[in-house]
Length: 309
Image (cartoon, rainbow, N blue to C red):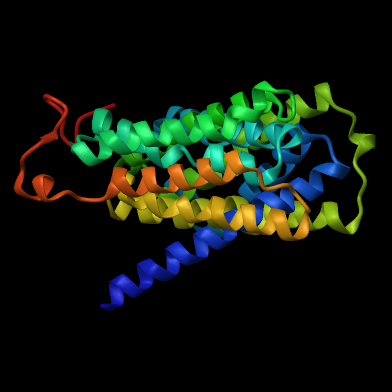
């Protein structure tokens, strides 16, 4: 394994571990805070923290030129992603919610084909079908009342928003400073979420105890800015769908931690769905022999990696 490959492996391992720990940590913290305020505060604080480190290079912001890019990225990657994610965790066990959200790599396979010109192989198509079957298996209990259907819907919408946000960042990355893009999307999205939380929730209901502060600190330092930094670096240096495939390890870690420390139940449907989704993501991103030889693969007509979304 070369030096570059080792560095990539370390980046992926760090990212997977950070995201895997997010779900149980946030789930515990949400017992002591309203969800929208929690999402807004950790995102805003994370963006401000990153901006402070970037201040010596403030001219790279180029606000007049890039303000729309910052706002669109903030809408998908912060407002929708973190907002729906945090509210959804109130309605579903952390492990189940994370599994549904990590349908995102499957969606990225589709969106990357449509907007980035990445090939769609027979394996990817089959993987998509298996992925949706996995979601159906996991969501089955949601129609019996034991699991919130609203929470399942929020999780799926979170996956869609996240996938669209990642594809958008991949498209616009040559136009903006990537570090300032992360900082600005967090600050803008965090301000909107915090404002929404102030209008809809009660600040006085926050319990400023150790577990809440741990969740807030974790999100401010690792869960938001560092995780985004690692993920976007990997995505910008490789194919979006291939990088996204490695995140299938995140729900495995989240489910394991949730089962051990949060005493969350492991159902048969959850296990079957988890296996199907993991297998699906593997198939979606596994290069086929036909794909390597240029056969049995689809490339979006007229699309290349440089076309505008």
